[in-house]
Length: 256
Image 1 (cartoon, helix red, strand yellow):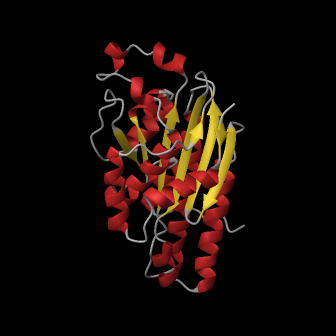
Image 2 (image 1 turned 135 degrees about the vertical axis):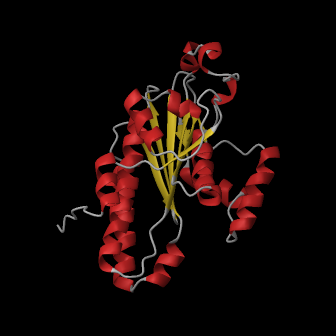
Image 3 (image 1 turned 45 degrees about the horizontal axis):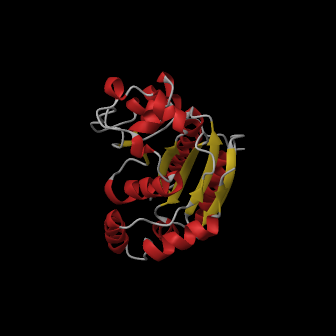
């Protein structure tokens, strides 16, 4: 049975990482490369696969400045309801926590990770629909932006099943990392370094179906070497039909 205390997670992040200044937060994260943080959770069973999704609302202040109060309140309420509902859709959910503009969800699974992609796809697709709706209603638009991180702490037998020589070019013994800390870090990476909203890694990619891998590939805009187990992967997960309608400018908005 694993143990996770979300408030302790937030306390660790506040102490070592978070800052009101974006540059200072980046410097803090760089400094962490030489510091081992306290664990965010404890996994008693090596045969338990644990996964995490972190979602950050990136530009709350800009949204508040750009719209009237009614519109801003609607945007944030819709965003909060969407994120919270999506993160809890899976029966694999272990725990969920919201702190300011950060959402953390932890899951216990069997190592098959497609459900994580389905959750994030739903969240990001909804955000894209919200932004499309804004362009329909306003001449000047400030888009809602989110950053999402996805990570997995695999069961020991899953690592042992992998033929490293056949698939990965580097050893994978270090794959077993704190996935809550990793997902939160990945979400921050999208904010600091990339204009694509979702970040994961080659290990998660390896544990997806071909269909989920294809969805990721269609929405990538940079080189990615799937054989480098720790390489980060940035993508823009979105339902392909919705994306096509948005690109063509003919998305039908449900007014209910």
